[in-house]
Length: 446
Image (cartoon, rainbow, N blue to C red; front, top):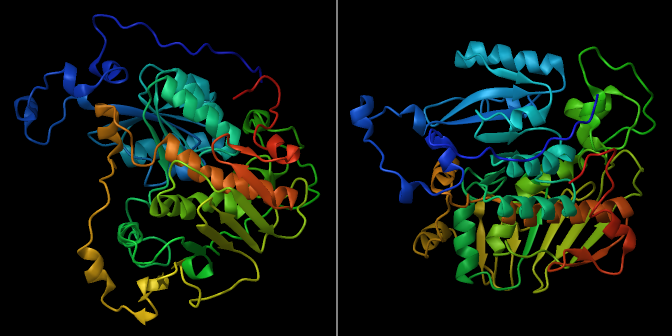
C-alpha cells in the first residue's frame, strides 16, 4: 500500500458555509440566533443544521458496540473505516439493520478524516494508531472522540495535547468513571469518594490500592505469546496498513484484532487496556489532574521483548507522598485491603469506612452534607457546540495515560524509575526516555 501524504488543511469558509462548519471555529452563543425548535416542527425537532455528524475509524469490536454505533437527533453516524474488509462489511450491514442508514465506507482513515461531511472523528483502533489519527483529525479541524488508552507512549500524549490546543479542537477520551457509573468494586460513583477526600477526614497523604477486590483482576492476564510463527494473511485484511507505524513483524492472527493487547508494539497488556479506567478516577479523586507521580516501582518477572507478560505489583508515588498501588499476580488481598487509606481513616470495598479507628456505618449521610465538587461538562455534543472542555479531555487524559505508560516503561525495563512531571521525562535513565518517543516505521510520524 502506498503511504501517501495528505496536507492537513481546512478549506476556506464561503458565504454558503453550513452552520456545522462555523461551529468548528467559533463559539455558538456569540454568533448565532437559533430559530426555536417548535417553529421548525415541534419541541423535539432538531433542525438538520443542529445535527453533528461522526465517522468511526476501527469497527472490529468497540467501534461496533451498541454504546458507540449510534445515530440520534444530535449526532448522526455517516461513515466507517477499517482495513479489514470483513469488519467494514459488518459495520455497513449494521448501519442498515440497526440505524436504517447507508454509511460511507473507507479503507484509508485519512479519507474519512478529510471528508467534509464528518464533524467528529471517533477513533476505535488499537492504541498504536491513536495519536497519529487524533493529530491528523485535529489538524483537519475535526473534533475527536478517542478510546482508551489515550496514547501508547508519553511522547505521543504530549504531541496530541499540543495538536488539540493548537487547532482549538474539542477532545473526549472514552473512559467515564470520573463522572458517571458505579466505580469498580466500590458500589458507588466516584463523587462521594472525591467529597470525602476533599473534606480531609481521611488525612493526607493517601494511598489508593487497586486490587482484585476492586475488580482489577479483570483482563489482567491479557498477555502475548512468545515466538509466534508466521501465518498466511487472510484475504481482505490489509495487514501492512494495520501495522502502520509499528515495526514490521510477520503476520500471526494473535497479533491482531482482539488479542493485539498482548504485544508491546500495539498496546500494554491488561495494564495498558484497563489501567486508565481505574487510574483516571484516582487522579481526579486525589486532585492530581495537572501532574504525575515522581516514582514508579515494579515487582515483576523479566519481560519478553515482544510479548507482554504479567506482573506482581506496581507502586506509584507522588511528590507529596500520595501513592497508587496496583496489585497483580500473587496479591489476592480480597476485601481486607482498604481502597483508600490515610492517617485518619480508611475506605474499603462496598464503601465501608473507618474514621480514627471507628466504623462509620452512616458515612454516606455525612458525605451528603459535604460540599459538592466542581461540576463537570459531560455532554460531549454540547461541549462541541459551545467550544467547552469536556470533563475528560486531552490534558487530564494525558496525565492519567502517563501513569499507565510510566508503569509499562518500568515493567518493560524491569526496574524502578524516577520521573519529572514538569519536563515529563525520566530522570537519569536513557533507556526509559527512549520509550517516551519511540521510532515509527516508514513515513508515519507523530
